[in-house]
Length: 584
Image (cartoon, rainbow, N blue to C red; front, side):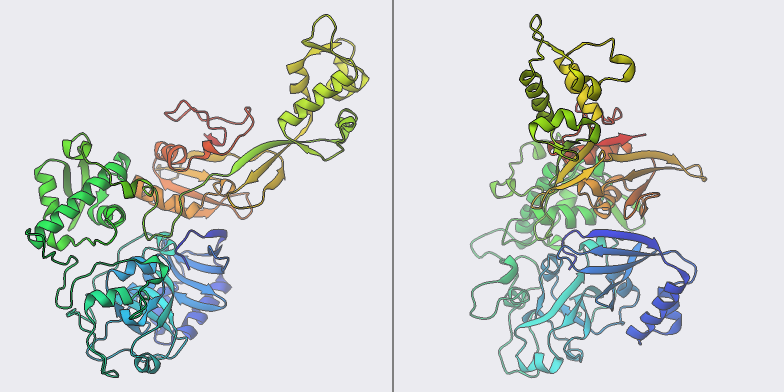
């Protein structure tokens, strides 16, 4: 449901009555929680925001935010916990287990098929069709997804664990998770600690399924079907008794570690050359691997960092510098982008067309809207435009206004015979274009003065066309993206950006990117004085990061065309005017 970016309708602080109702709803929906746990989940004094949004398929969803994280979401009057809540209450829902490579596809929008389940020694949890369930990975009990059971446990076993098992609603790494602090799952004692690769099915006499086949089947490849739904492709997993992520190639004389070292170094160099930027540093090692290197992995291959010593080699070659900025957490703090290993690395051709989209993320690159300034004919200007078939309220582009002026002057023989660059003013032009104190002093105007005066007398309007949508016409001038640097009572500076929605930018997506780039906390609040609009607030002076993001990764300049008198930015290191951007 949240595999793609959603659109926020409103974001408001919860009222006291709504807080009490939410507690009652949580207690009714999740009877396993005690009253103390309900009060912990829905605290009495901490801020809780109610965010109403539309998922990419149009579903209306209400999300409850607390402590910077989404804790619950409501869909069609049903209440669901997020993965953040399940990490604090891992036993809240019956939990099923699948293999780690499946997570990427679930986050991309795939459902979980029954052949992908791993059956623990105690058997599967007992559920009925329609029950809400959690999904965890082998080796860690912390849930990474929630979904609705497509059949009862009894029917699952009767089917021989074939078919669709769970309709997945929300996952770790999807856009709902990204709207929070984006923390990783905690390490909890696993329900299936020893992945042997053999699925134990007490209700079936079928042969054990090798892990390689199981990882295919987890995403929908039925035996003998020959195809995998959701374009999940070859997961390239090991044979039944191999717990690693790379199958030994019998034709390759290198060891498994040597093969994995070569693959990881290739993905590492690819990520440094194409994805990681200087502004991203310091960068968590886990983020480098999960957000950048995995997406550079060739189709049909799978990374397994446990079988590699690549990071040690990269430091020894002085390509990167890694430090432990906080206890037990390593971060990439420096990169030598001029190192021969990086400069000589050749990007695989298959990656050239998809460098801006992470595979499996379901996220499309930002496409700017086409913005055209328009001019509306007021009542006082209709005598000048009616000869061309326009009336009060007609909308014209600048070129059309110019054509009307030229046609009017030529049709009424107003072009000066001695100087073709001048136009004589008749009573209509005088009434429409001149001030009262000018009507006896100005008898002629040059063409450009005539057109500019006419544009000033017309009412501003604009047309916005988002890719794949019908044009939207509005009166007035489009408000630019507003960036201000403010100082709070604590004497700390914060950067505030408003009006992103007008240009098709999702405030949550921008905040998430800025949080990673700036390594600073971000918050999203309703914009003061604006209906259904949000503002993003980032700790510190982040004007430079915002400028790079808006001018670089969100190429608004390629789409919008706004009037030249719109506000400009003089704070960015660029030679290109940005009329859609206003910076205080």
